[in-house]
Length: 498
Image (tube, rainbow, N blue to C red; front, top):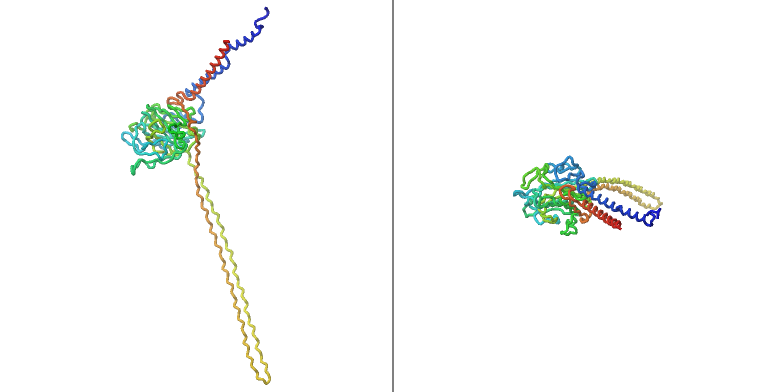
C-alpha cells in the first residue's frame, strides 16, 4: 500500500526502540567498571606509598621523631633522632618537648668476658618479677644486648607515642629482643654483680600491672627484622584468657614497615650507618663507629591507640629470649632504667591553720567583806542605895551591892574572803595538718587484644613497601565491582541476542 511506511506497521517503532537500547551498553555496567578502575588506581597509589594523609595516630613521618632506621639526626627531616637526644655518655641533652628518655649500656660477654646481668633460671615473659632470677654469666653474640634506648612523647592529638632502639652485636641466626615498659617499676635486689654469698641467684623486685606494655622484635636467620609484635599485660600474663598457647598481640607488623593505621612501625638499618656519638661494639667487643647492616633496629608505637588509653610508666627493661614464642626462656637483659613519662604531680601545700587564742579570763575579784563591829555594851551602874536611918533601931548596914559588870561583847571578826583566782586558760595550739599527696591513679581500660589485632605485612624495610592490608582491600573491592560489571554485561548481551 503506497503512502504508508514501515512505521505505520503495528509494533515496528517499539521493536526499533528495543534494538537501539540493546545496541548501547547498560549504564550500570559502565558505572561499575568506572568504580573498579578507581579502586584499582587507589590500590596502586597506596602500594607506591602515595595515598591519603596520615591520621593523628601516626608514629612516623609526623614530625615528632625521625623513625627511619638510623641514629644520626637528619636536618632535612622534622623531629629529633637518637643522636640529638643523647650525648656521648648516654645523658639526655634535649627532650625536644618529649616526656622521657633513657639510655642503657648493657654489659657484654665477648671474648671470654662475662655479663654481670643475665637471667639465671627458666624465666619467661608471662612470669611475675618475683619469679625471675639473675646472675653473672654469658650469652652468644646474637643474644647479647649492647646499647638500648627509649623515648616518649605526645603527638598533636595528645596520644602517647613510645620509640625504642637497640644495637645488636651480631646480625646472625634467629634472635629475639623485647622492650618491657612497666607502670609499677622493676628493680634488682642489689647492685650488679650478684653477690655469691650466701648463695646466688639474685632476685627482681616489683610487680607487673594490667596495662604494662611489651614490644617484641623477632629477627630471622639472616638477621633481618621478621616481625614486630605489641602485647598488653592482662593481669596474669600477656595472653588472652591466660592461655599460654594463644597470645595474640594488639598489633603486629611483618618484615618491617608500618601497619595500615600507622600505630606501629619498625625499621632496621639497610646498610652501614653512623653509630652516634657514643661507643659501639662488634661481635668481638671491639669499639667501632659505624654499625653494619641489620645491627640497629628502632620502633614506634602509639600506646594510646593500641591500648585504648595512655599509661604512666615508671621504668623500662630490654631483654632477649631464646625463640619466637613470646613465653620462651629469657636470656640477657640490661638493668632496668627509670622511664617516667608522666610528670610527677607537685603537692599543693595545705595552708597552716593559725590557732585562735582563747582569751585569758580576767578573774573578778570578790570584794573583801568588811566586818561590822558589834558595839561594846556599856555596863549600867546600879546606884548605891543610901541607908535610911531607923530611929532607935540599930541600923543594919545593907551591904553595898557590887555592880555586876556586863561583860564586853567581843566582836566576832568576819574572816576576809580570799578571792579565788580563775585560772588563765592556756590556748591549745591546733596542730598543722600535714599535706598528704594523693597520687592520681591513671585508669587502665581493659582492652581485648584480639579485637585490636592487626596483621599487616609490608615487605622490605621502608614505609609503604610491599602489599599492605589497604592494598588488598582496595584490590579486592575493584575485583568485586569488575565481576559485577561483567555479570551485568552478560545479561545485556543475552537480552540483545533475543
